Length: 457
Image 1 (cartoon, rainbow, N blue to C red):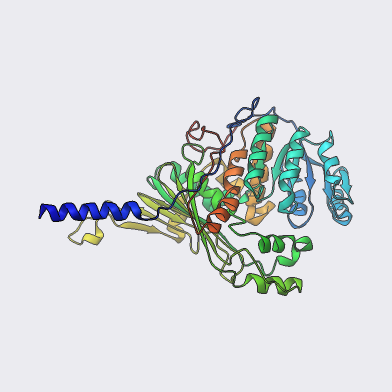
Image 2: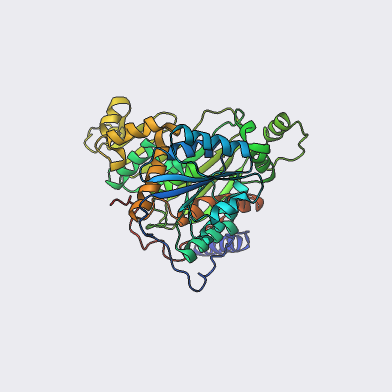
């Protein structure tokens, strides 16, 4: 009998040793260049009145100009767009409010550089197409300006590292304008997590599910549809990943370590492209559905999804799974907390969960708050607008921190970590869904800060 067992074990070892193994694809974390220092917790000199220059005055930029006129301690001093009529329209919007005329730039592809060079600007607010985000931000920091960049701020690892290095070199803030971290449910859940009510968070989910059929035409010269046609992977991950990274304290005690992606065929992509452009489409690289699974250094998992092609309801998926509780925003806002008081002969009742929805959920949420959830401030944000108020809170916090010389809520490492999913998911997909390393953009300092927190004066 012993010999049979020994033979079986030897056979098993031989089979395992000969079986193909999935190797993790390595991604370099380059050494920090000489003369640079980390910008974790970066504080810049306080700015009495933050002078803001806008590059890109299309759908998002024009709204942002109007929104910033309602934020304390800042003023719009410069505006730029390649289309002169957009520049004139935003200038008229400011004039209607009785505000001083801004410097106006436009008419050619390099006009934005002149805005960056202006001595009348402290912060460059970039709302152009994605492919120009990184180069504009890099030049703005070289010109001594802080930068805020619409999502996604970078589309490649090269751009992510370039922005990290330039921020470290110039000691200028480089923030991505990820508004979804300021959704009221997300902020409330973050406060609940930080109180320990959900126990140890072990898994999170986030997504961008948004059928864009009603919006493709609004993107100048079809740039966004063209980008999806030409690129595979999760090309728009930040709305889903940003809020859950804050929950997991990414680069504030944990870090994303390994990523695996899987996608469908592009069933609807070619049809959508032909419908909106009138041009036959033989190849559309972006899938109708892309799924990315990430494991962290501390053994947590993240599921991130992207789908802009099918008629499913809008959904950022936001789910937080803890050892003692659960919270989810979609499709219905809900929270479950472990009920350890239930005791009976029925095994299913032992440690069962208490479910909170409707008014019970509101009552529960009211116990967990931050200054940003002050009812008066929430009402102001809703009135000022921008995706229900979260855009206003994003702008308010940016200006508040610059005005008071405080660290921003999102730093350049957040920007790089949330944006790198685009290229890393592509690498995984092109290698038969192989696992891929996630680079450490902090270069070994991911656990130097203990937990995410908002900075206040």
